[in-house]
Length: 82
Image (cartoon, rainbow, N blue to C red; front, side, top):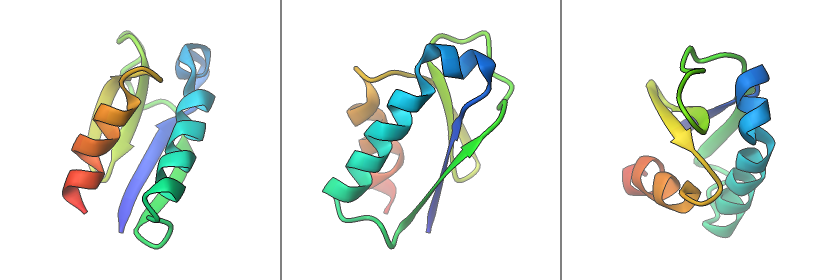
């Protein structure tokens, strides 16, 4: 099971974390990963100074996630590792 946590703290919220949550939900559905991925919101991952939203996939923090680079990030950190 892949564990994806998306920061919804103040800084990431302002950078579009809810858009990233929606992109993630859509990708999970599109790739039929409902039984392979757990999606959760989390508070600060400690990377507030970096552009974009911070997410955590399993034990790895990924910073700078935006709607425009989401597909690339999802492929690299989720699809390629399932």
